[in-house]
Length: 368
Image 1: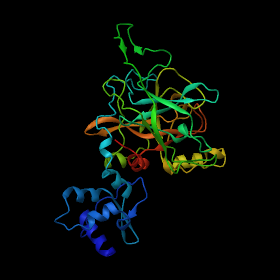
Image 2: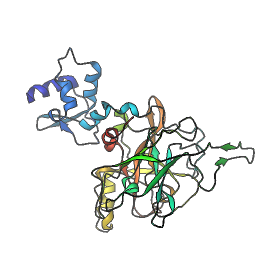
Image 3: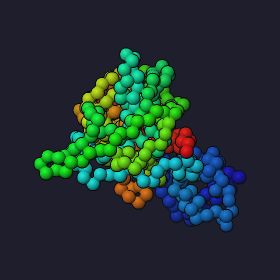
Image 4: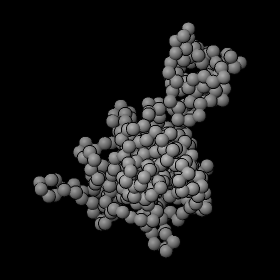
């Protein structure tokens, strides 16, 4: 049976008489066809029942060979076929045509998916202590450490705000001087939450840090009509999930906010460089790095410039790289701000939870 299944998959992939297709760059562990129900189901169909789309899909998740077994990127296949994929909007991640390259201050409505998470602090005051991103009209994506303590207890989350730009006052406006047009944002939207889901394998015990990701389900839908409230795109296609981000420029917007300090009232942004994962491992597994920052870098993206990144973003906020989504150039969220060795730059990059690796988890926990 194993030989039969392997032979069929080889035919599907077009690997016949020396012809071959390249192995996909899989962000997850590759498994044999027999270990992947989604692939095995397609392989076991007769050629007459197998559609062209199914054949092409198998070709695109082909990982290579190991011990005479055909390997596939099964988690990626699960994403492509996931029942909840339709819950993620296709109209997302719009790039502001007036964006100023390298500018520190964000334009009004430039990043309309930015969310602020309010938490009741130990002194009883309520503060915006973390960021997040709107990924659908009912869900905000954030970091697990924003909603759960190191001891595993839930933080006292109060709510979520969408559409904010300047925290210092009730009205957000730019321009109006030197012949520049006055641009004002519409009112913010504040939400209570219905449910908070933290990754079941999230670890933050002071020695290791993994799967720093969480979802907040809002009590009511976000109104996407205003220009200051729109969703971000997530990496759902093969091209997006297999994209090599090494040495690309990513953008991190935020209010420069961590769990303990507020750096800026106005939404800021910074462009930073994505580093190869192996280089990041050298930074974070070195003996001179404090114990709490030694971690498995396999579930993170490593990015930043020495002395530049951490002060200009929120924990839980996005790391975004422009890319093609639904045929258009859009911002795609590839990372979630997780942690770094210092709060305002430093001698090594910061780590961002890898969204691609967690796409099956995200989709599993979405509801209409």
